[in-house]
Amino acid sequence: MKYLTFGEIMMRLKSPGLERLFQSPSLEATFGGGEANVAVSLANYGLDVGYVTFLPKHAIADACIRELRGFGVDTSRIIRTNKGRMGIYFLEGGTNQLASKVIYDRAGSSIAIADPDSMDWEHIFDGVEWFHITGITPAISESAMRLSLDSVREAKARGITVSCDLNFRKNLWRYGKTAPEVMTELMKYVDVAVANEEDVQKSLGINTDINIACEKLDDNKYKELSNRVLEAYPDLKMIAITMRESHSADWNSWSGCLNDRETFYVSKKYEIRDIFDRVGGGDSFAAGLIYGLQAYGDKQQALEFAVAASCLKHSISGDYNRVGIADVEKLMGGDVTGRILR
View 1 (tube, rainbow, N blue to C red):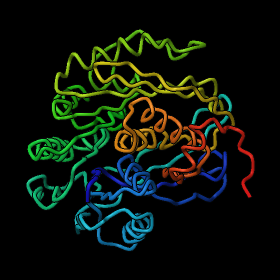
View 2: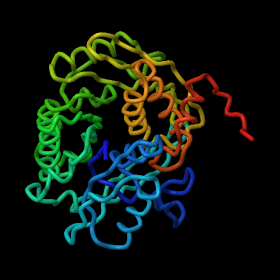
View 3: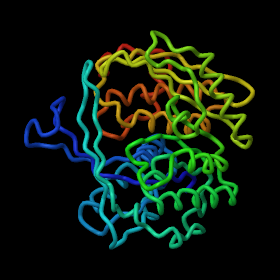
């Protein structure tokens, strides 16, 4: 197993279509979570990837694992336990000027109460060359925070490349620690960082005057912000930042940038109208970047793959980005028509 991701996977309960929660007595049940979403994308690109989490021993968790296996994700290192529960998140889709809404129900989940000292890191990292984590896991609980810090330290000690999507979630930091207190320590072990401008500010305390409500985002502001992150973390090799201009819940302009200390790269921009589901968009960007950095000898191409992959995710229901390499490269090549293929 070359690639490994670690975090919490949850049951996702979404109101049908664009209904508000419980507008009708139905919810669509699927699964999702940042790090699992990345693992699924990497498997879809043909990479040898595994996923680590804690799940209870019951039929719902069994179904979740079967689904991951169906995508080609190695689930052999998932830890089954009699303690805790499976986390849930509720999703209400937004449209036009009505924003989407997420409600978390994950207190007391199996990963939230897991014992950090129980981890066999030697087994977990056996054969792994790239490890991915996000800022969501250390926000869940104090023990999950310890697990997260231990994981990146153990990975780094073994010479494994570490990537982290900062993923600030204000509704999760409830156990007495602030995001900067934890994430500034975790970032010392990261090689490749992924974020948006809010993640950088809220997770690392590095402020910027980027105005996301403006007509057009200023590339130079993102260059300045990424330079400040690289200055603060001398061992960080690169940082990629997504650039989203939100005109409405249905219409976003989407691009990204990458700073590797030598060059500042900016991708092409996509106009995404009639967004179907933007949840998982950042995860699909992170996965696309990981794949692109391995598949292409050119960082500009790697960034373009990440942005194109995440652009496509906005048209796909559910957390997972159900696209393959050919789909992404078709869009990278300039085919934005969406014409039927037959």
